[in-house]
Image (cartoon, rainbow, N blue to C red; front, side):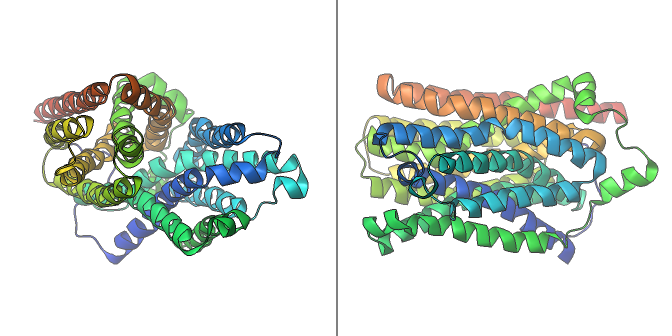
Length: 435
């Protein structure tokens, strides 16, 4: 695959490794907060909404407040990406972590409805809007930031580490939640222990903010600035004028990314306990192992993209994911628990391989001047659309037509094969033209 606007091949140095680690913290914090909020949604609803509401409507209000954060992601992502393409990756990358961390900390410190009345849900809503605004710029910016820092023969590894950190954030959030529920009684949790994971996440984030101050601007942006090749048009306007095919491909890649990650990390454990008679404790244990294999698969997928053609690698991982998903979901749907834990973990490994290929392909589709804007628009719009419909589709199918889940997953695998072949074919033609 071509390497437009990236640094020359060389070994990773200490600065590269530091950049990778600090960049990965943001993605980990995003998904950590996601999991913790979901786990404590019922308690949050009871604290921040009028006690006259029954538990159902309090939960609906809480999840609605949570969903607002997703709705503003495309707006936040585009605004922050705009400034990232025009004024520098580092400034925008630093701002996104600031806007994400302090709202997380604020959730753990906000006064409740009993203390300040209707101002409590208003503040909670504002906090979620700020978080969603910041998150919209975090992951695409991280992919671009590390890709433009590391040598071009390590872009796959760098971006896959960012992707792997997302699963590790889910794992960390689940572990902290389990610890809180083990150490504290339900009464203690309701009376204040539910705040501890948010405060811990905020503290963790503040440390990340301090350390990110020492990150350097990417060599690619510095070179564009020196050569005065920064986009003269509004970046979003330019990508619509010249990069509609790239947007379309990136949107479809985001569909696969979102579908695989939501299904395996969030939906399957709930389906196991709610529809397929697997004890919730066993489902969460299996989820934990699978989160580890997803992270491992993501890193392997990225490394192989550095060594081989990324489109072909996406086809390979998609085929393996489709085959393994067939056996795993057949056993789950038919309620055959033997070996299901191993199949779940292996399916996660292959899904991780797909997730590791996707950012590599996306960062190579857009030129440096509009790279963050192109990826951010595609990724956040895809997350808003497909992140919203995937849970609905899966739940409806689980209730009315369980085998539909299997066909949906096979569709994602087939889409991955199609996009991988298209990418490989385009690359082959580009190589011929270069000759």
